[in-house]
Image 1 (cartoon, rainbow, N blue to C red):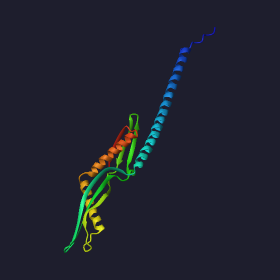
Image 2: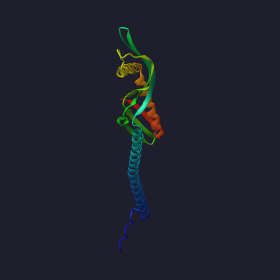
Image 3: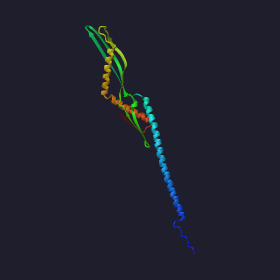
Image 4: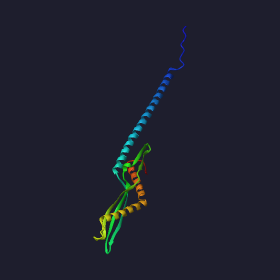
Length: 207
């Protein structure tokens, strides 16, 4: 009499269930891995492209300004030149008005870095210190004069006297904090400009 075959200790249905579970777990793990890889790549690509666009926008906006004038000071003064030789006299009284401008002479020297994240966009900007950009005479008129050919007052002498006064005024207002005010205004102007471009946070410092 033939011996009966021993029955398998593992039920066929249970085997199929285990195989299916293993397959499902493997597919889930594979899908998770693919999702992480793709999302990381998409995130990196998205932020890189976004950052490049913003960098181009900032550069274009800054270069369109070229010279950033942030502070002006208008002043008026009177100079008097006198010459005499014996009983012969000459004098010239000239009234003039000037305008002193301060700001950033070359905005191409401004440097910046953009930081993108899910919480928003941050730009950190470093700007050069403000300088005197100009000190021009806007108006000039002779208030009173008397000329003598024996003791002449030349136009060059008048210009030199005006230059001395306007340079003195420029030094005086710089000592009073004119450039510090220009720096502060430059920072505020840049901050407003960057917020207008869509940045969520802006940090500006002067060199």
